[in-house]
Length: 286
Image (cartoon, rainbow, N blue to C red; front, side, top):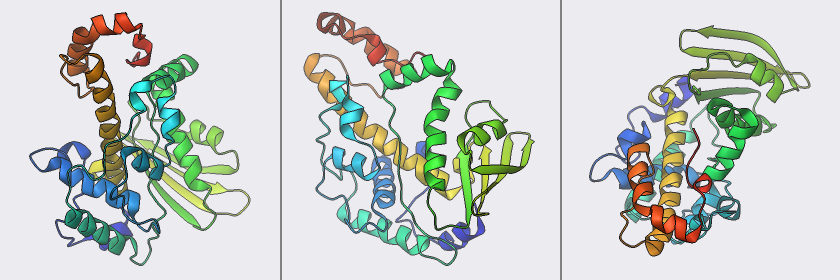
């Protein structure tokens, strides 16, 4: 991680645990640890204060996601009514937020915020039709977040870390197309890591962008982003399961991952046919 992040969080307590989301959410207290870290990121530095007492829709809005857009054509995402927090205690939330704000306020750092994109199944399938492959479809969201970050006029130098998108190693042309106001000065694409230096033509500001596999293991911001994304996904899945649980009470909820997803689709198939719910709205095509 950049030196400033490393200095800020060296010797940190266990109140804020930031790592690969699959590891943090694991175990009996995993959901509470992950929730505390995700909500700390969504609330850090916000004058609106913690998300206590809000519903899941409020959490998505804090991340820049409009619930109505998520639910368009997918009513199972419309009832984001779960209360926040679900697992962590008030003390755990306060401690995690205090630790993140203290570290993010260290010299050389400025907390801007945490935002996310939620791409429901139907929207992802539409992106696949436009882009013809999964990596390009995912890049629409990732590239949008990069462009949004660089709009901030204050920083003179950006350090952007991204988990590598599938097997792709060459992104220079993508950044040139995505950022027409920036000039690509240098590209280094060696092994699994791809690094780029760009300069804004109008201001001489610079952006160093690195993409690498398993970036959450090497970058604090990427790991924290993975926790926010995982937490928001689980909020959406809870709403999904509640809606379909009313439609087919005997069908067990699904985590949404491939093997369990196939089990769920097999069990709920009669109810889907009866309600004429298309699989295009429920299943990513790739």
